[in-house]
Length: 198
Image (cartoon, rainbow, N blue to C red; front, side, top):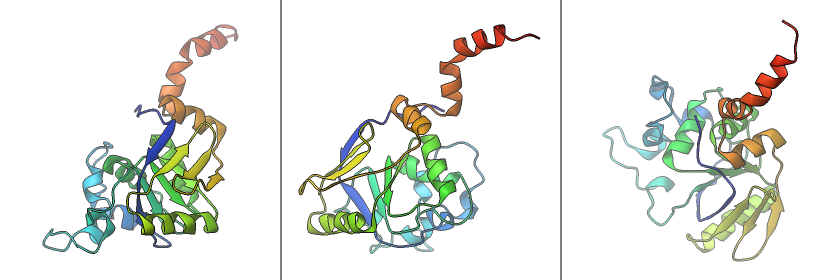
C-alpha cells in the first residue's frame, strides 16, 4: 500500500515522556482483529486515552488540546514488546508521520518504515532538549529533514543527525512500500529474467 511521500516535515509535536512504551499499550490486543490498515488510530493508546465508559481521560496527552502536530516524541525504548504491525498502523492512522525516541525496538522501527512512519532515534541529551522545547512552548516547531537525515529544533537551531537504512530511505522519499518498489522496477525485473536461461 503506497503512502504519502516523506521529504521534509515541519510541524509541532506531541510529547509522551514515558519509557518502555510497548506495543500492547500502543494498540491493545483486543483491537487486532482487522487486517486492513485503517481505523486503528481511533484506538491508539486506547487504555491510556479512555475510561471504561469511553469518556476521555483528561490527563492524557492526546486528549490535551494544547498539543498537536505530526510528530510523536516518546521516551526511551519505544515500541517494545510483541511484534504486531498494528502498532505502527495505529500511529500512522492517527496522523503521526514521525516518532522520535532515544531508542526503538527493532521490529517496531522496521514496521514503521514499512508503512511511512519515520522513526528518528536521537541521543538522550537531544531528546531532553526536545521535551524542554515543547514544555516551553506547546506549539514549538521541529523540522525533520529526511534527505539530509537531520532533526532541528526551530526555536534554537539545535540539530542532530539520525541514521536510516538507505533502501528504506529511498522508499519513504518515493512513498513506496516493498510491493510498490518491486512494481516500480518491473521492467528491469523482466529484462533480468529474460537474460536468464529457463
